[in-house]
Image (cartoon, rainbow over all chains, first blue to last red; front, side):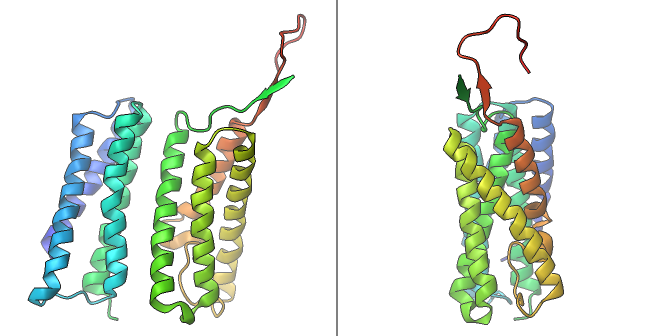
Length: 122
Length: 146
């Protein structure tokens, strides 16, 4: 895990989540903007996935449980695509809110992954 | 007389379902990890985590699936969750020995931003609003709908 990349993920995912929830509550259906930011959150997760797979080889190891980290990461990677598919199938404003909830959930999980990787003394 | 069960997956109920799905995913992920990693450390807490995860999955399905049976399943699972979060929440505060490890319900779901405490209440309100109603087969003159 690379620290600045992790912060970048949070800086993208939290505003993305709030934006989607706000637009959804204002009655917007899923659109390029809301789907796009969710796709961006997913893209960053995939980058982090590659980084996390490579990092231990080059000496950047998790301070906490590797297994727990990967359970979080894989669960997080699944979430945005599910929300995007939801938004494609169900063309109502509530799908925009769902996109927002998904992005915020990813943010929480990325923060937990950050704790496991950098903070935990295990 | 016939009854109808309004759809539980319309409008804001979709957000409720999505959040239930997320919690089901989160609880399943964590319980898989706990059981793989150190089951012997706290078997009661970890078995309960797994049970909670299964109940969240069933509740999510029950909210989506139409019909009276699933409506009842939704009530049972959501009530079970509320009971679980209250009982385990209290126990984890007063008897930390029994619950040395975190479960989705520990300290009223603090590890999950208290979503496990709030969600069953919202779920129950939603189910109540979407309760099956009796509708007359033919409209009867002189009566008003309740």
